[in-house]
Length: 388
Image 1 (cartoon, rainbow, N blue to C red):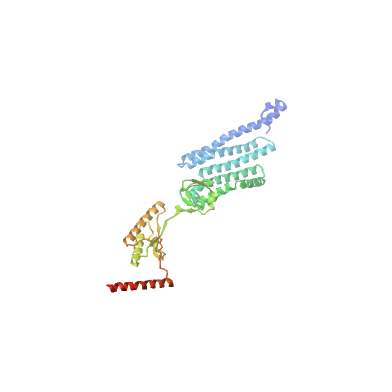
Image 2: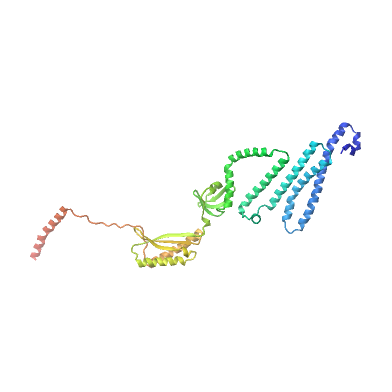
């Protein structure tokens, strides 16, 4: 379409004016048309959708519609640019650039809309389990949502760059080399992030658990992307990198279902057989009838003749995980056992030693001297008796 045919008065102007108007006017009109189409098409697309969303009782469609406003406007601009190139007679180079830009904007609008919709919907345990059949921990959701979001953006960028005639393969290879350098410089950070994912997915502990490793012990206060904070028994706050926790043996005391009571009673050797049998029977009955003790786990046996005591092994599983409750129950059981032992007249033994001293044998000279001494005394004793 020749602009001079549309504007006859332009033919009366000088040649350079005609050339400037011919070059500039289409771009100005095209820009105005793009703006008008943006407003009109956006209204045409969004107004019916808003009316439908207003009739719904749920707010999810309203949120999805509001998230779609910016992507729709971007798509309308791309579509308008493509439409304008067919209305005006631009040269081949300008038309190619406009078409490429318009398609790139449409692709960008598509992935932009996916990201915005994902921000509204995001990953939820119930929805994820219903779709995939897998159950994911609640604490892993922020990490997974961020990961999926950036993956969508990365795929969108690849498609847009490919549409703009960039060598995507070479760009990815260059980014790979740069990524290697970055990963080498930040390998500890990356390993800590993967450690966080491992901690959240394996769930060896949670906030509030009391854990112990070969190097520390305490209560978990927070689990971050890079590190985990543990409050030690002396109330010092310890920050542990996540990769160290994933590679360490972690003992979680808070996951115990019951605690073990294991004690050895030591009785003196003056304990009689009847006393021992009675003590074993009463202690066994006591534990089997005590609340919070598994009766099937009770073991009470006379196990050893020690050097200074008769040893009785007492084992039972206490169905209490809280340390204070366990120690209180343990105290009550020990007091009852002491009462049984005291009532039966049995004494508790303690480590002791008995020393036996024997007189040394006399030598021959000592024996002869003793005989002579007795013979010297015998005449005096006989004389005294004769006088009497």
